[in-house]
Amino acid sequence: LPTLRQRLHDPIMADVFTHLLPKNNPRDTRFAINFFTSIGLGGLTDQLRLHLKQAPKRLALEAQALQLAQANAVKSAALDAKSSTDSSSDSSSSSSSSDSSDSSSSSGSDSDSSSGSSGSSSSDSDSDS
Image (cartoon, rainbow, N blue to C red):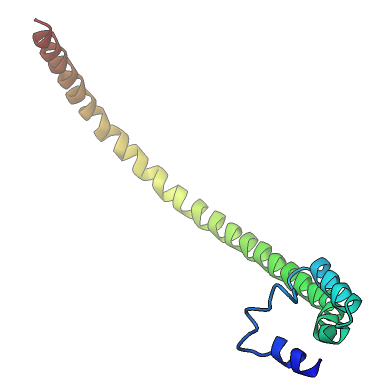
């Protein structure tokens, strides 16, 4: 049994035995512990038992860290939104004065575009004949 335990926990062979002694899902871990114990090889599952015992603590810490990260993200988003609304109100007052000068120059370009559209209709009539 000690030789088999040593081979199962060998770092070189760890990838080969990952599915034999699973740690990714507590349900699979419990199944492996129960299986090896029932066939008389319960001594191989000591590390799995330790992992299963520590898993709830680790999951709680990970959940707490995730909540803190989300809270920080919400706070930073709120600060960004507040700063962007402040800067947009400053820029809107300057853009309103430039809009009035743009509207007078655009009225002259409207007459140019209307004459161009009449020329294209005459070319369409030439293609029909």
